Each structure stands twice: as C-alpha cells, then as structure tokens.
Length: 152
Image 1 (cartoon, helix red, strand yellow):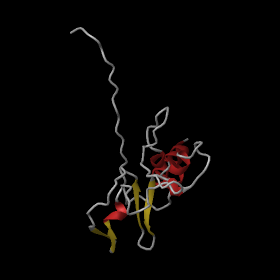
Image 2: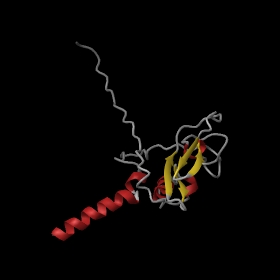
Image 3: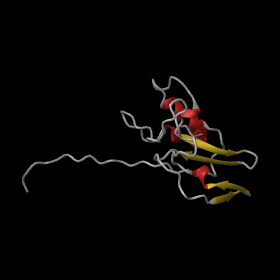
Image 4: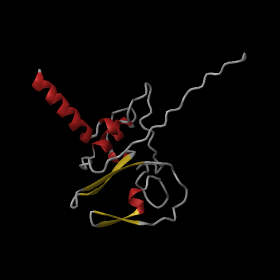
C-alpha cells in the first residue's frame, strides 16, 4: 500500500494505584505535589494547592490518599456512606471530583478547580511525584539499600 504515512503517537494514560493499608498519613505526597506545581517549580510549598489529599482519621489509624479528578459543574446525587474501622464516612470524602459543594480540590486563591495531571513534564516522568516520594515506597528502597550495604 502506498500513500502518506502519518506518525501516530501513542498516548499513555497513567493512573495511581493506592494501597490504603500502606499509607501512614505522613502527607509527603501533598507536600511534593504542591512544590512540583508551584511557579516556578519547587519554589514554594502549600499543600492546599496539592492535587492529592490524604483523608485523615489518626485516632482510628485510617489514612486514605485521594487524587483530584475531573471538574463537575453540579453536585452528584450519590450520598452513600462507607464504614471503615468502625467510623462512618460519606461518599464525598473519597470523591475525586472538584464540585460546587466542597473546596477540597480548588486552588485556594482563585477558587479554580485542580485536577491531577500525573506530573506531566518535559521530559516525562516515569511516575508522578507523589508516588516517587511516598514514604511507604521509600521504605522498600531503604531496605534494599541496607541489604546491599550488608553484603558489600
């Protein structure tokens, strides 16, 4: 077959798999996210500008990271309740959308909605910064380095 060749670029869709059993509530993900998205990059740190939030219940040792999804102009009709560790949470606590009924994923100064962009940058990152800086993942890395140094 002859004709014009078109270069098709594959779009890689990233997602974050969150293991709530490993989250210790340190909020390092919030800190690095806000620093990465500062202008200029890494010039400031304000977790209120983070695109990921950790829902905290330290008395029950429950920590759930939630990252920002799409903006929605209307509130949802779902108001289900979830019970985790004996405490009841409403559905909004774990929702990723930025909507009119809550300020969780809105830029604090302008009120504009925030959405996780998986740390799009040039050159592209393999993983979003929150994943790279997660202390649960860093512990695994530190254990590996410790084992290697014992052998060396």
